[in-house]
Length: 568
Ligand SMILES: Cc1cc2nc3c(=O)[nH]c(=O)nc-3n(C[C@H](O)[C@H](O)[C@H](O)COP(=O)(O)OP(=O)(O)OC[C@H]3O[C@@H](n4cnc5c(N)ncnc54)[C@H](O)[C@@H]3O)c2cc1C
Image (cartoon, protein in one colour):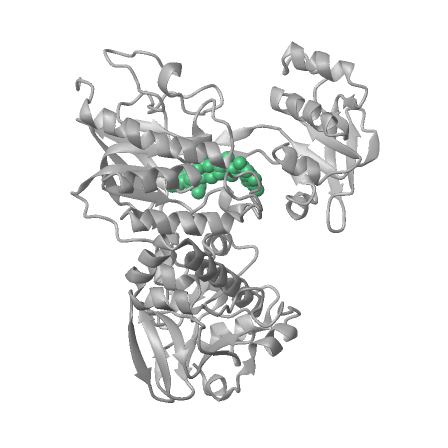
């Protein structure tokens, strides 16, 4: 740190938040700094140990790893972090009943703050593995702690505290790093060399030039120049240790979306040595959803980030190793042992594989899409999306899923404009759906029509359409339901598994008996290799079904491991 930084006087977090235009919601920032009650502290006492600290004692420093979870019993502690301009400091006071930490405690990433006792204080220290255990056991305590960690994370993001990534918005490597960190809920400050004057000062200060970007600075770690995603994942504590090359685990799961996470939780809990490889972020597509409203047991909905964080903890509780930042590149099988080569060059070997690499929804290539996804642009038509719409909506796509969506939406009282590029629905949609659409006066089919752009301030308000003759029209709608297909993430498999015409993996009865063995339900054309979730042919693209398949597949793996087909 420079002299000017160390001399900077910290400002209280309320002041810092106001400076960046964010408001604290009430004294505990909407749950970010809660007070534990006596019963909760009592429970934690069983997992940790108490100690007295003198004024001025540093409990942990910015950048330090492996810090305990600390609850304050008496006295007070000040936590200080850099924010915004790196010379600025923000301070938060912790009082009896409160605890320190953000999500990075659980991932064993370096601390973002330095915590110092301001008066003689009594603290309760709970080691990380014990914290994981208690979170896994006590749902109320886990709610309070994980919610606080996630909220603090978003406050830190607003303040621009924690590690820094210096890069360019036009640089692909910078974008990949930022996506990896954002997807894994890591708070970083992005300093764009294209627009932020701090970039040049910082680069020059450390003897770098623009040719070195992206540059990643994490307190307590060497500065990284144009690092690989694997290096980033290691520095930020996003990955567990991979086993030695010669080790063969029972189950290797590729992809840590809901399907892969469920397979790892059930695999680990049912005694299989389990490993998970994830290219980008734990949680998959579901992790990007701001609110999953239809997942059983959560009547108020839950955020994808929360689901992902909880599921990852659960998988680790059952000893599944999660390797984030490595993509699977190839799959080969010899003598009943499967090998997956990773993007970082390593080869992982396993007796069974679960392919859970999901699918990408095809997205319309139109102006305004990025901004309005989730605020008027939807990829599913369920009660949840329908409730957000009033009046007219548009459905795009000529397949059965688009037809079903159009009919469903009119039943919810909405006027539907069905937009297709072709001249009729005949070639792409089943006759029974076409009949219903033609009979329904609330559905208008616009043939040979394409969406050109989307408009709306906070949510979708209108579409600009273009016909095959080049005629332009504006259509006022509050919802755009896009059903233009999905592409499976199966490129990495080459042609080693049987797939359908769109590349989705065939399993079970869709393959039938081949060469003296019959694939089990969810088993692919390669014995011992299974496919679950969105990547599977015929899957229902929902979080709950992905989780269900991930849970179910472990039972089938046991069956396959117990009776492998004859090796030919
Ligand atoms: C914005 C949004 C909102 C949604 N909301 C809902 C909702 O409210 N309710 C609902 O039921 N469904 C919802 N869905 C659908 C739901 O998220 C998916 O059906 C579900 O996530 C599928 O789970 P999955 O595990 O099969 O695949 P995914 O979630 O797609 O996960 C696949 C994972 O595999 C990883 N991967 C891919 N290739 C590789 C490779 N080569 N090596 C390593 N890893 C790889 C990916 O990075 C990804 O993390 C939503 C989807 C989106 C996009």
